[in-house]
Amino acid sequence: MILPAIDLIGNKCVRLTQGDYAEVEYFSRTPLQIARDYEREGFKWLHLVDLEGAKFGQPKNLHTFEVIKKNTDLLIQYGGGVRSLETIEKLISIGVDRILISTLSIREKEKMKELIKKFGSEKFAFCWDGKFLNGEFQVFDQGWLKVSDLSFKELYQFYEDCLPNVVFVTDISRDGMMSGSNIELYYSLKKNYPELSIGASGGVTSLSEVLALKNICSNVIIGKALLYGEINSQEAALC
Image 1 (cartoon, helix red, strand yellow):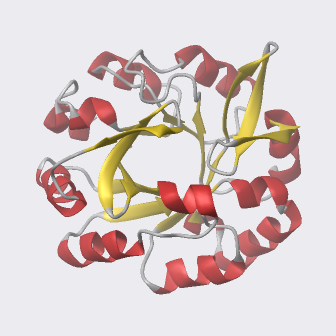
Image 2: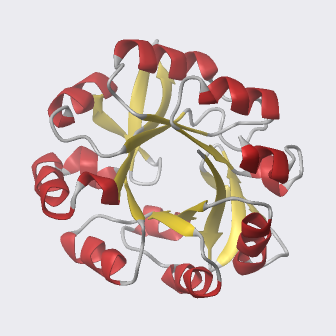
């Protein structure tokens, strides 16, 4: 499944380079205009990321979610600043179809297990993003601002009995660079964790990459390449 991405700051569509909040590019079209275009082109899901929420610890762009949800039939997964039970309950109450969890799944593992059992694994997706440091893929949290103390393997082993429907993985060094996704990383993860439903995110630049990733990953998120027209949206929606 292909999910077009819209990243939000100030309820506007933006893109960061390598997760750097100092490298912000604003788009002239509104998030609703972009979402409607994606729906017309055949996409069923939208990946909506609240970058301010990820940075400050609670969602800041829910107005945009509500506008898109009211004016389209898209299914929406929403992430950024989801770090408490109250936030999760609010997102479910306003109709978020799938909630993206990063920091909470790393820093509050026991609590996250309880939430999965309470609301169901289909309501959640994890985001375990990072980059290679000293030869190891190190997971980051708090909006990619801090390196966590846990390895990908340790996180997987803890949640093995209650994994959500998908775990999205981003190589931060590739995100927003239009340099291609780290296909080798996803292949390695699939080989080492065959039971894990892996979602690819970050750096996808071509339809051939999308097709290659679909042989490895259950979900593929595409941001800049769709916004810039580097990948044909209608063709991607058919993948």
